[in-house]
Image 1 (spheres, helix red, strand yellow):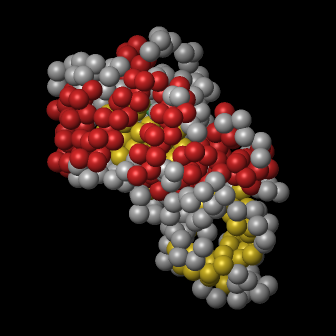
Image 2: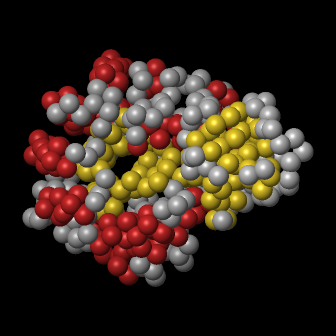
Length: 409
Ligand SMILES: [Zn+2]
C-alpha cells in the first residue's frame, strides 16, 4: 500500500511530499498525483494524507518505560512511597495488585496513549521478582499483542527488587527470558544487592545464555556509580557485547570530575555502550559530550503516574521538552537535538544496526530507505513544536496511519 504524505516539512525544513511503500520511505519530493484526491482518499492506488504544512519527524522511541506499573487513566492516587529504591519498591509491591485494573489493561491503555501521541518504538520494563513472578511480564506481553499492528515493543525482564536479597530472584529472571522477554535487566549492583560482581555475573551470564541485550538501571551516585559502570564495561568487553549493553539513568555521571567523566564516556563510545535517560530534575546527562563520543542515547518516560511517581503522561514530545529544560538548553540546535534523541537516538538504542546520530546537529531518519515510522506535529519549527506540544498529530507505523489527532485509528 502506497501512502503519500502531502505538504509536509521534514525536520521543519521546506515543504515537500513524502511517499511510503512497503514500510519504508520510497520518495521525497513532489508526488506524481498533482491535485490528487482529498485527505484519506485513495488516488491511483495511493492514499493521501494531508500534511497541511506540518513538521515530519521520525516517530518517537520510548526506551525506558515501565508499562507494568502505569496508572494512567485510573483515578489519581496520592503518592505513598518512602525514600530510596527499596522502600519505593515495597510501596509498589504492597499496592499494585489492588489497582482498579489489571496490569494487561493498564499497560494496553497506556501503550495506546503513547502511540496516539507519536511513539511507535518502545522498550518497556516488566518487573519480575519473587512476589510478582511472571504476572507483570505477562501483562506487558498482552499489551504488546493488543497493539502489535501499531507499535514495535521490546520487553526487558527487570529485577526491580535485586537478584540477591530474596532467594529465587535470579531463577524468576531466567524464567522471564524463557517466556520471551527480549532484554535482561539489572539494577544498582552495589547499592541494592551489595555484591556487584555476583549481580552482574548473573545478568551477563543470562545475556550470554539467551543471546539478549542488557539494560541496567544505575541510580548510584558518583564514585560508586563509576565503579559499577566500569564493571559493566569490563563485562561488555570480555563477552564481546559491543552494541548490546545500555546503562539507564547513570545519575552518577553528573557527580564525576571532568577527567573521570571524559574517560568513562570515551570508553562507552569505544565499546558502543548506550545510555537511556528519563530527563531527571537533577543529574542531567552530558548530552553534547555523549554525542561527540558517538554514544547512543535514548529517552524514556519511566514510570507513568504509578506507585513510584505522579509524573509521566505518555507524551514523548513532552519528555523531549523536559530533556531540553533539565539540560538548560536554549539554542534551537540543542533543543532539536533533544527531539533527535527522543526519536532516532532511541531507535538506535533499541537496535544498534539502525541509523544513529552522528552529532548534535544530525537530523537523520527521513531519507529514502528509512523506515516509515513517522509522526506529523504542528509548529513553525521543531523547537516551536517542542515548546507548544500541540495535539494535531498523525502517527505512522510501517507505512500506515495508526493514530490521528490523539486517537488510534
Ligand atoms: Zn526505570
